[in-house]
Image 1 (cartoon, rainbow, N blue to C red):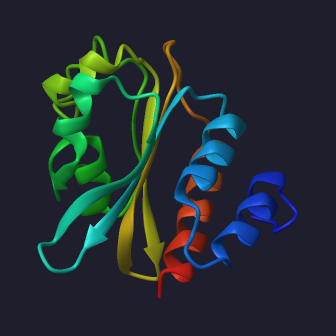
Image 2: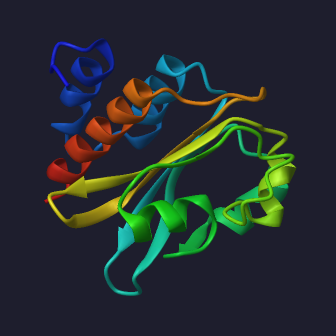
Length: 156
């Protein structure tokens, strides 16, 4: 993925600041993908869980359910465990088993979770969602993975 991509160019500068302005990074990410809902979870080494660092558009009743996510649970936890993107076309009708019951409360449909990887080291998971049924393209998945890799490297 070229560093000239507008999303990567916009976030590279943000990732170079200390502290990283997580809400602004999330705003760039969700706006680029035209997603009203987005999350950034960071892996907490002390407990091995994903902790919500920033969110946009989540209803209040969902916040406590996604504040801390175990590896292997829900879309974010499965993306972290598999070290690859996990997507569902429609959260409301999905029967795959990757969608947790609380996810339906978001009222979103098309959803994608991508791990933030620095080589094999997991730093966290990025999540985006649309209010319509949607399959994210391979190029969109790759872009979210590249953004995650850049974030993971910035957190070294």
